[in-house]
Image 1 (cartoon, rainbow, N blue to C red):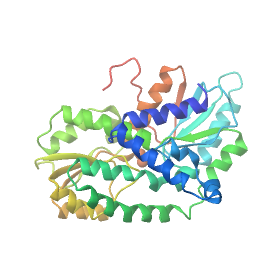
Image 2: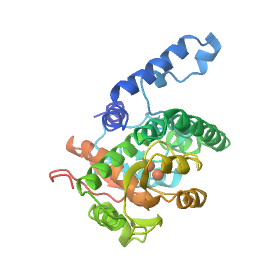
Image 3: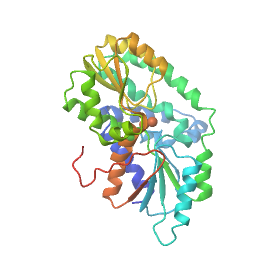
Image 4: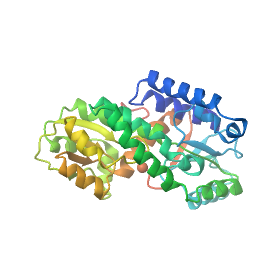
Length: 326
Ligand SMILES: [Fe+2]
Ligand SMILES: [Fe+2]
């Protein structure tokens, strides 16, 4: 495979596992095209045309001037200059063996970080599916989207991209497509186990090897709001995919929509307090372990095509190739 084929595969998997129906994603892309057509010539020059075909601008190829054929990938959760240098070091010190052809990170860097806020619309649809009126979800999310967009704007987001270019190391990141994969996977597993109490959810999550390893490493599934003894009620998987955390005023609306328990990757203290006030149980499955599941499900597809995976940067690598999915 080459880097473009790997990227295309990531986007396809993201769409396939998106909580939104394919029709909705197609509609959003069409709206982006209509808006693009109305731009002036100068505005069109700045516009990222990939947004016309790709619903996940928080995932990008950052540098593709290295190896043409990808046989060995180093993959991790956060890739910065140090990981890129490790990839170069391992390649240089293994002259007879296969060098690292590509580094894949999860969290956004470069233009993907600058565009993080634009995937958050996904949360509006997910909340609407759980019964929050779409106009309420949308107006609260809009406030948060502009906050996130301003928040990432001062960062030196091309720092790692420059390192990749100087080292001649191919570099990309896969964010929301991987988060869609874990969200769908965890939803299928937990709902199949039909949990009655919050403790049943914890038990179900711990049967997933990445979460068991997360627990061994000190960051396993944990109740952040509510109690293990509480009824789970209606379970929502609204805090796993969609860029980053939403608006803290949403918890009250979620409670009004009848949600009893939210399963998420991580939660800030201000959100946790609002969840508690709204009588919603919050089960935090674990951040890096959840991100690892999403990346693993994507990396398994590369492994099936004969690509070797070298895990780094916190990635709990579990391969489900040749095994029935757990
Ligand atoms: Fe993630
Ligand atoms: Fe993450």
